[in-house]
Length: 254
Image 1 (cartoon, rainbow, N blue to C red):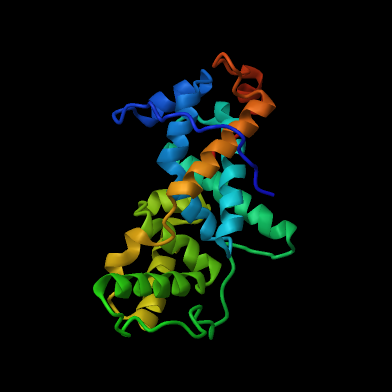
Image 2 (image 1 turned 90 degrees about the vertical axis):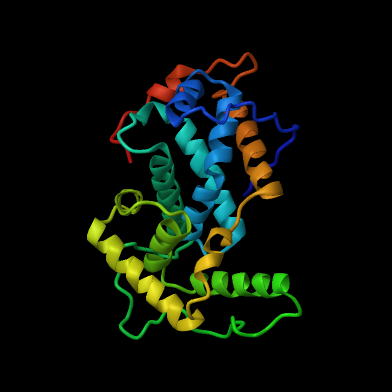
């Protein structure tokens, strides 16, 4: 169930030049603006990572919120051995997989689809159908692309969204999904081939707008996550943080 915000969002006062390392240090100090900055910086990545496993936007948004809660309450486990975005993405993907398992929808990122599974079947709008104007046509094409991506088998969709849409490196994608570099390369090529077969070559310039996550949805995740962190005592009124929460859990970095 999605958390509900009951307060006005704080302004994001983080300077553009602030690095992830700076933000992590500030989060550990309990600075609310740092929590906000991290979420605004990585909301889109996490939503797309979740959407690679989850079949609908609402559940994916819930996964993003839960992922931030898990990450912020175990920030002591982050040692900088991977990029912050990669660490967050892996938490998000694991959270999404757990959600699917609880719903009795078994998902494995190691599974092999059936040989005859094209992953992009079903009726959808043809990208070659002309709309009244260019803007409407682009909107239609984006809808067709999102529909086609959504119909990809999970093992391909998860790789495609990280590599093609978020432009993650092969190594970071492999680390996020806990698979090998070679598997990432193979699945990425396969996913592009499936989409090209359905949509032709016209989808490439629309990739940055796929599963866009901003505006009210972004604000809702930030606000609701802050409310829950304060309720749990991770962020308190004076800006301090309960360090026992951050450092009590030790384990290997994702």
